[in-house]
Length: 309
View (tube, rainbow, N blue to C red):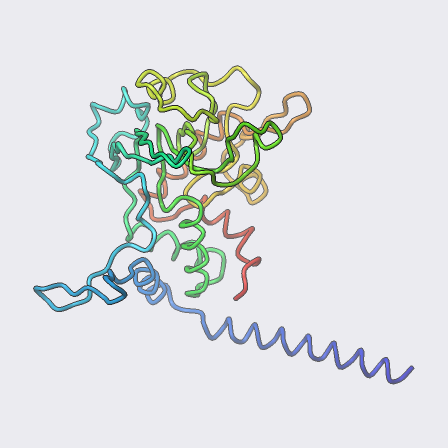
């Protein structure tokens, strides 16, 4: 019996020592806000390479760099938007903020044949400096001022959106297997065909404009209806996740989001309300103006501990 007690004590001691070592390591890695911001800026940039070798600037001899995060596929053929254009694009509430209108293309592969489809979307012009400030302030706010914290959040932004915050318009994604087998109608996976999703205020919405399992190119009327038309008459009108890091409406409520009424109950179903769109817009606009991204902080509060340090 004493052997088991000794063994138990050994395990407890090992666990305590491991925990103390982890705490000591984390403490040693904590940075001042100034140093963390510099680290965040550095993490946002990666070298430009060609044939596996870094490309040099011919004028300075320095290695060329590009954004690690902000390389989203929708940033094609973009132009700056002016306030007097926003009403026709479903972006009236974004006056005075940096926006761009992008007309991008995706390529479907159907039966080994390629077909081009065009998407039209209004994007917030997010910069590397914005991301560096958002990640730094988030990590400071949650008490984890480490480069590892910055890396985790930045990588989540890459996975979720590549820093693309769609204010209105069409987002094409290849998320479902769309084939003739009825058993696989909603099976997640890539099949080479991009489905259109209607976006407003950084969140997917459901409208009467088109079915998000459609494989045909959209008409101009469908795009316009997505940007400005009424939402569907069905109960589910608004998606759960807010870009750019994928904060769910449940995370928002659980971790102290300031907007109320973002969840409704319809026929015993708990669903995001249209107020969730308002919350997403207000929080992102505040992030642009202040450098503090509350949505990012709420995501980090719930998820950072799930990642290895």
